[in-house]
Image (tube, rainbow, N blue to C red; front, side, top):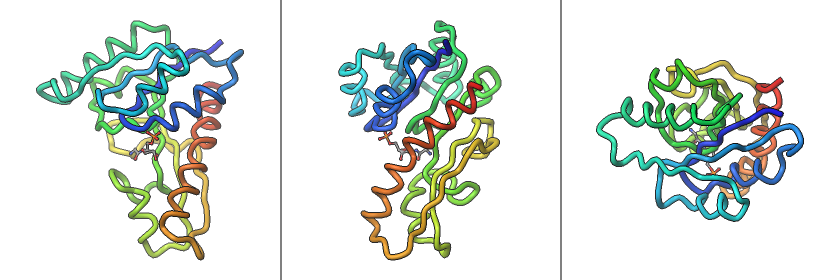
Length: 182
Ligand code: GAR
């Protein structure tokens, strides 16, 4: 059995997909950690009976101080991998040097690192967009890529493209977890 911790900040739709689709005989979600008390994903943790820790990032003086508390909380569990599923924080070496983690990002990296990647991908000069899952290192959205999934933008409205990315990213993240744990 492999143990994972999932980090999220907002709606938690990727978190919920993992809660319902990961093979339960092989992978256990030991807990979820959220940094935003207003996140919709909190209800999903309760619904699926997944232990949830709230570490409100707004109360910490700087990123390092938050990361120290985050690392401490992760280390309480016997964890093989930490999964960033919509975790909207830049992590410092305090975290990246100690924790093996992967991150989901809704663009074909290295295109469009950072925020609003779906909008930026839709509006760029390429005919295709997609999603990436990568190991987390000190560089924002810059770690080694585990896998990418691509779709054509041809003929799609922004809403259609957005929905396709939201569907595509869930299975991509699940597949990448299996790779990272293998
Ligand atoms: C997802 O689209 C994910 O790819 C993106 O945040 C969203 C979270 O949705 N992540 C990033 O942009 C990371 N840089 P969710 O809360 O419904 O899972």
